[in-house]
Image (cartoon, rainbow, N blue to C red):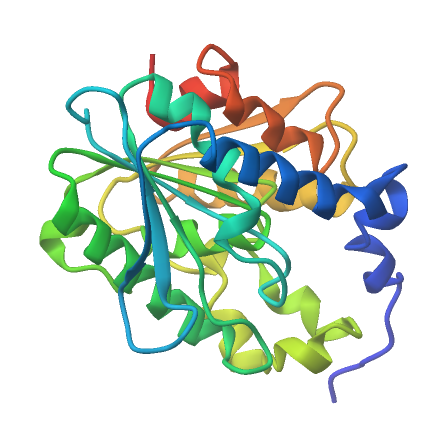
Length: 274
């Protein structure tokens, strides 16, 4: 018989806002920063459909000249909150380096299951790739880190042609083993069972070929997120993926993404190269 008692408080392990001073003000700040960037005069094609559902839309932020390729940023929020409109400003760094940046929304739980969101992100990337030629670079934060990691698994929803264009994947504070979420109260919304949690865990999956993956996390994050970054890089290192784990000093779960606004930051360089 499988024992079910929990040796730690798993809701606390994933409680990022509770351990970040002033975190309750961040969603409004993100929304304002994103709106200001959209109003700054940069060229943005908004609400491009990649499916029939209301949230199956992405924005495409264009560089000033010819695009070097497609950079995709997938937002977090534990698969159950936020949309693309909160994150437009995070395209600044990649755009300044000449990349077209795709910011997709997706249907949230509990309306759909996490495995369905994985399929949606695959559809969004494929649709965006029809608009932008050249290499593809993926980044995602928290739940978005899970979703971009799933794009380079052996059971990727992407076609061989699209998958072959992916140069690098950056999982920022990503979740790579979802089995622990079965022990949380938020699973009432996520609706994970053991089978789906296992299938959707990139750390338990096989890489699609020999992908390049960087797991990036802040030193001041909850220990569980640092552990998840390390285990993902370690597991796939043994499966012939090219992996790296970076623990960036003096950053928490939310400040870790701020560097994406700076074209010269280490995290932007990890995302789209030098």
